Image 1 (cartoon, rainbow, N blue to C red):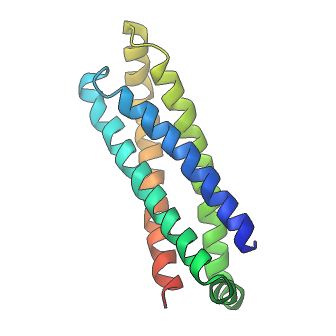
Image 2: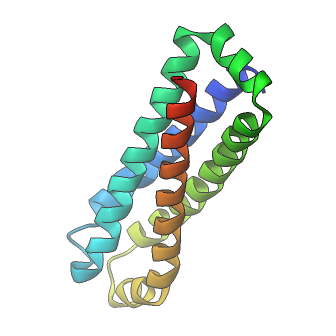
Length: 143
């Protein structure tokens, strides 16, 4: 993975995540008490995007240094690769679920939210895990 492919992955993830967060944010008032999960997902999507943007900034400022760090520490490279892959998968699922939630505020849509709330909480937990992983990567890259 070179700086350009890392940057491309980060841009793709932040774009999808940002789109999902915007859609979710627009549904907050529609879903009442379930909106706590939705609001948390919006916050986590913003935190993941901020962490990814920070990593992208580090790569843009010091591309040779960062690539040497990644090359000399295969575990760091593997962690970055796995985290980016995971972020892309979760962001894609999040966007799909956001689209479904935004497609209608009928009684059926509200019932569907209750039905899928456990899955949404799992996505939220995964987002938190990725945010934590990104924080560790940021710390390691700053050494």
